[in-house]
Length: 290
Picture 1 (cartoon, rainbow, N blue to C red):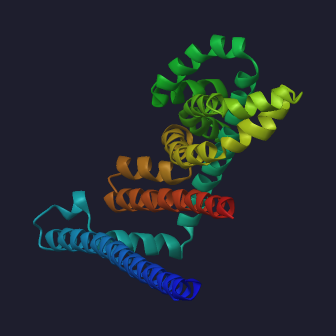
Picture 2: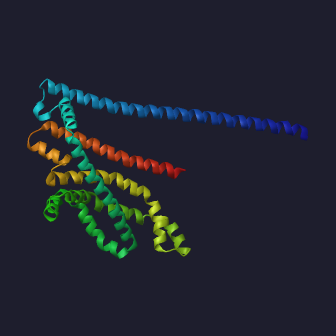
Picture 3: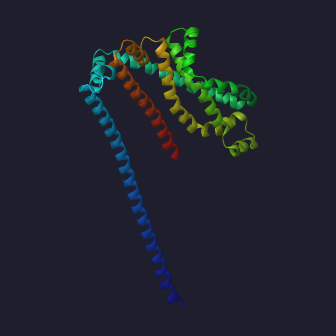
C-alpha cells in the first residue's frame, strides 16, 4: 500500500513544482514586457518633448527671418543666442545669475527654518495655533506683489528687502502646510509613547518630525519656485543687478533680445533648482526603502 502511494505523492510534487516554475516564468516574462513598455513610453515622452521644442524654435526662427512676425518685437532664437553669448563673453550674465541665485537660496533656506520652527511652536501650543491660524490664512491670501512696495519703504532698496520679498511669497503657506502635516501624525504611535511615559518633545522627535519628512520635502519643491518668484518681484522694484532687474530694464529700453533671454534663463534656472530638490527627494526615498 505504501509502495504504491510513494510514487503518487512524488508525481504530485513534480507536477506542482513544474506548475510553480511555469507560473514564475510567465510572471517574469510579463514583468520584462511591462518594463520594456515602460522604458519605451519614457523614451517616447522625452523624444516628443524635444521634438516639440525644436519645432517651436524652428517656426519662431523662420517666421522672424522671413518677416512674418516683427523680429524687433518678438526677436528670434538666433538673436537671443547671440545676446547670451555676448553677455557670456563680457561675463555680465554671471553677475546677474549669481545675484538671483544667492537671493533665492538665502530666502529659501530662511523659509525652511522659520516655517518648521513656527509649525513646531503651533503644534506644541494648541491655544497659540487657534489664535494665529486665521492671521496666517489672511496673510497667505494677500497678493505678495502688493507687499513689495511696503517692504521697500520699511527696509529700503537693499538686498535684504529682496530676500524678505522672496520669503513673503512662500512662508505663510509653508507654515500652514507643515502644521497640517504635524497634526496628521499617527495618533496610535503618539499614544504609545505617552503610555510608556514619554514627553511631548519625544513625540515630536520620534513620531511627528520623522513622519513629516515627505511633507517637508514636498513643501521644499513648492517653496523653491515661490521664493524665486518673490525674489524676481523684489528685483523688479529694488535692484540694480539680477535677472529681475535685467527683465525690467530691458523692457524699459525696448531690448527684446535681453528681455526674452532673461525669461529663458529664468525658466532654466527654475528647472535646475526644482531638479535639485527632486534629486534630494529621490535620495531620501531610496534610503528609506533600505
